[in-house]
Amino acid sequence: MHTSFQGLVMPETAILELCKLYILSLTLLIFSSCTKLTEFETQQVDQALGKIDTLFNSTESWNLDMNMIEENTIRLNLRGSYSYNIRKEEETETRISGPVFIDIFDENGTLESHVYCDSAVYRPDDEIFEMYHNVIVKTQEGRELRSDFLLWERKKDMVSTPEFVIFISPPDSIAAYGFYGNSDLTNYTLNEGGGQVVIE
Image 1: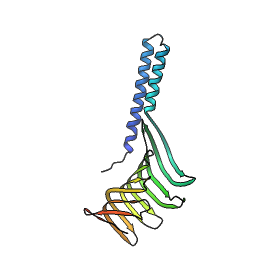
Image 2: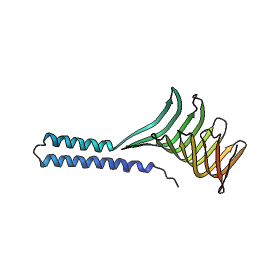
Image 3: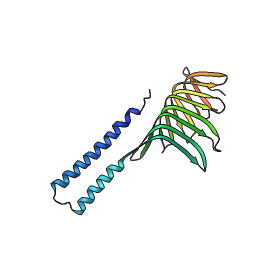
């Protein structure tokens, strides 16, 4: 079961503040116990403070409105109420609180799909979106997918979930556990009752 990440924002901020407080205390202790630091010792303290600061970095934004543009063509527009960007050593992720709205465009800049969810996580290094709670994908052709969790691998243009889904392709609708397909919902596989049903 996937859980909302909204409660995780404050502990990470608190950890960062504790690290900074610890380093400040250590620096004050060094300065108070010594009458004067040598130039080498001062450089060591500066390097240690700089290294700690670059290991973990976070920023917050309200009323997020982000466009992804490739080769002068809009490919994605993402809007959310609040975002929290975390950078740790070699990993970056952005946690977005909702409602979250994502518009997906094809290579020509034509709107393909709308996505709605309560919250999302974006990992820019891998171009992966995880969408949580009340996820609804609607295409321009009227197809619709509903679930409580959806993983979108943007580089591959594939969406998937192991969870319960309702897929609507007028005039039909199908309920199943598990979905794998592309973001415009034209090619997909639904898992149903332990087997797979491919609908064309």
